[in-house]
Length: 112
Length: 490
Image 1 (cartoon, rainbow over the protein chains, first blue to last red):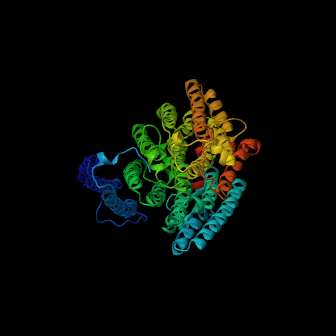
Image 2 (cartoon, each protein chain N blue to C red):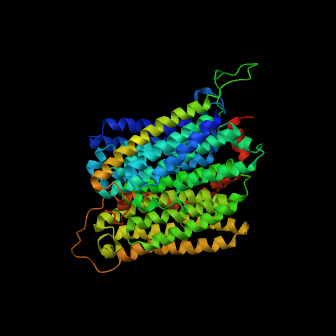
Image 3 (cartoon, rainbow over the protein chains, first blue to last red):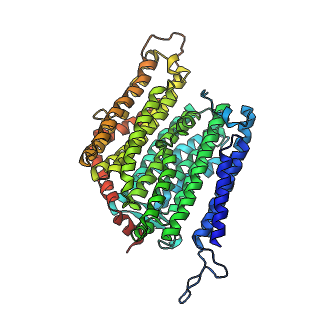
């Protein structure tokens, strides 16, 4: 099970990075979303995927689910949700102000 | 357990929320922001006093003992940085009403600043690697708000890059925390530090160490990851730039020092690697500073070599050099704020930030000129100012560690840093009196900067008084067992 999730995370990372390397602004925004999904899936694998056991340790219990990765993912999802919305709004405003969504034309050396 | 450790995070957070309600009333929000930062400063001074009297303060949230709960650790190193953060925030908040336009102030300017302070203090104080990520996000979120405030064409363009690069490195950060958790099974920093010694495959740890270094190196603007930094620090208003230059990169270098003195102490390979990175940061940073004629950009580039200097102390890794790093870190936070604010005042006074169009400012603004002159000396490390003590310790440590090449590079860099800042003085202040330029009022602008400078001179001239504390921190950092014992209480 971890194996499949790992491969999935890898594919998401690859597509995310591919999209980030594009020139179009929207693709970059989507790319950042994809790599954060990949990171979340990846966190899931770190505590070993087990099903059916409660996250409780008592005397004599050997099988249990690790609750920590879930807590971390939840925090991370909330944060990436917020950041993604910031990025989208920022990208929209940048495109409107600069009249282009091409990163090549957004370099520029003049400030102010 | 002591709740004192969390106060430097809670007070700015509450202040930020409260100020959001008064964002349209500038008189109230200005007054409240000054009041709250002073209250916070007093609290932090008290906490620092307690820490140096009684040792580290550990707060276990909800009474969940470490390593199960989230801990906040106010030890010597972190609390001294929180103290410095608050000192320079005082100067920034007192100068803000003059340097920031009213419209910008109304758009939750003070709220963002307080959230930034809260996030920075949290990043310094947390004892949990994942929590460090969360506080990074808190301070980054506030900084996204600050950098884009105003919404100019250029500002949007540069802040987009800033947000994207930080977002990317944050994702890598989370992934690395996952890696580390898979290897050692904990995210509590003290607990990780204890367990990495038992890990059999040291190769995995080296990989994790380097990826973490990449993450923090991006935030700290080290070579070759600094490319996003100078321009994005130039576009917002001067007070924001000052806070960014003083706090954000320093949080990155603080995390590097923390991680590599506590967790990855054994990884030998990193030391030589750090020396190379430190040397290249110094060289490329100062070349960048020399290449530009823009006052703000020049100061922004000067952030990079200073990060190189701080990393040098960590790379050499003996007591003198680490003391130098800590000293330089404190010194640099203060003087960078002063310089960014000065750049803002100069731009305001001359009406342009381009050095080629300036000249003869000394006739109109003699005090400003001399303050800049002293600041340049402080930054470059002319005795008896604070930069000298920091560099002396660093270079002495490097000699002890037999790293001669880096000493030469560091000395040459210092010389060029002095030249680059003097360039502002020569081109901006010398020359014919510009008759068309009207003298603008600088009341209220120079006070906060002088406050920072006086403090900077104090830690330089009063090194006898300050050094014992810095030395305590260096000895403390060299022995990770102290941190581990204070948190895990075994």
